Image 1 (cartoon, rainbow, N blue to C red):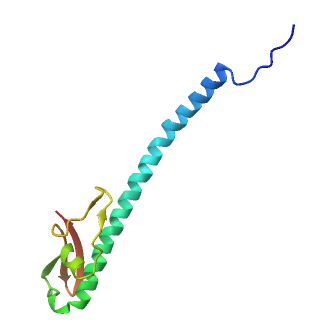
Image 2 (image 1 turned 60 degrees about the vertical axis):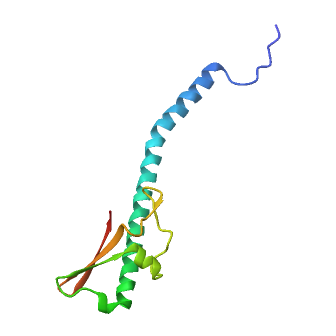
Image 3 (image 1 turned 135 degrees about the horizontal axis):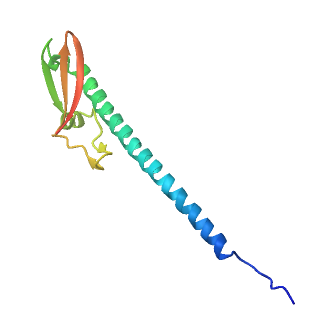
Length: 122
């Protein structure tokens, strides 16, 4: 008898590959999801740091508006943006929307002569 020239893969080989791919997807998907979430959180924190730095620059140029010891001053992101201290297109990576200029504020507190900055998002 003549042997047939067989080309391609057997059903068993194809099933083995499909099972291996399924296992890989099951293992890799949560890792990728967690990495993306961590990256968004990290970018969010950098955006808050950028807003804080903008407020510090604003304060350096408006020393007369900074709070006295034990007091605080609030500056909106909109004020920082209009003054050119912050970018107008700051996007919140957690929501993929722009930070609201009126609802995003920086509270500048003077604690014993040391200025503290807290970003508040309402």
